[in-house]
Image (tube, rainbow, N blue to C red):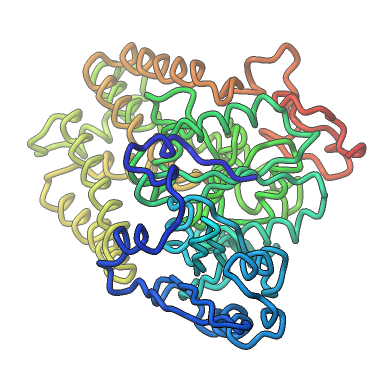
Length: 500
């Protein structure tokens, strides 16, 4: 199925007009890359038709072999006497090409031409026949760049949505796999595919996703954030509400569990919903490794993220307001280390935190080789020089470094960014009013987590929001033999995996 969003209501839309040579030339004729070519059908008497396509976008070999050649020299058209006869022949398969469409309005015809199609105009019939013949260069299916694993498939999603659909279907062979297509963006005309398993996935999830995509009315849809903003239940939060993956087998596993996946044409990632915290915390290799090892790794993920969030805040709060809670030797060691430091501990912690943030941003934004060099130079040479010059204490440098290193266990980039910001907030609260401030800021963060819903599902499910939480695939991962039920919060029509 294919739907179109609110762009159909655009006053400048040509949906109310039949496709004609005059109208297409008026809209596209000023572009040098749009080719208008007249051809004569191999008929009893010459029947002129106009072929319209975008140079560089269509595959010229396919266009010549499958469209122009049959029309000009094909035996099927010898008995045609009028343009209407040719239209009927083309309409019923005289041109052997599988991906063709009959367009009866100018807007659809222009959209097809601009997105890699060739159109034959039949003005007397008031229609056009378009053939999808995309011929521009595309990235081939390759190894994932951001979710590499040792044991598992080495293919990834690519920018072409048709290739992604074929990849998912090749791995998930059930006939119940449903793909609903939408077009979003008044200027970009971006195709969006909504994937789900009919009869298994909760119909409410699918309805909410499709309704929100239909309501999107924006000029361009060129990034995931453009679409995610319209799919979110809770807008003002730092935490990711969707799981994003570039691995086709991860998409198939989520679909088989009863989730909905959204794939956007031009973006090599899939957005998986509902993306609760337990889902976001799962790594790419969790289902390729030994369950005991994965369970230990998952527990360590939660533990290290807690360390990353709280360590700088607790260090500042305890040393500034509650030194009596620390061992005397530790207090003396920190005090000796801080001699001759010109800043108080709170300001020193903020300077160090922001310095590390600058290093991370520099490493991400600069070219790969340069970014690695900047990170190494900044972390080691500049940090060592700052400690030697008594600008910062080695103790705060160690604490902040541990905090940043432990945050890298976050399997989700958006969750990693949320941890970075909340760490600064907690540190500021601890530096102002001590442990009370840390407790209050942490309580606000937990309230933020508790208020988030994704497609009506609590973000903390299954830890919270259910009468009897089922934790079999959260903090630990059971073996495939024991993991017989789908998550209850997904509200699938069939919870037992053995039954389909």
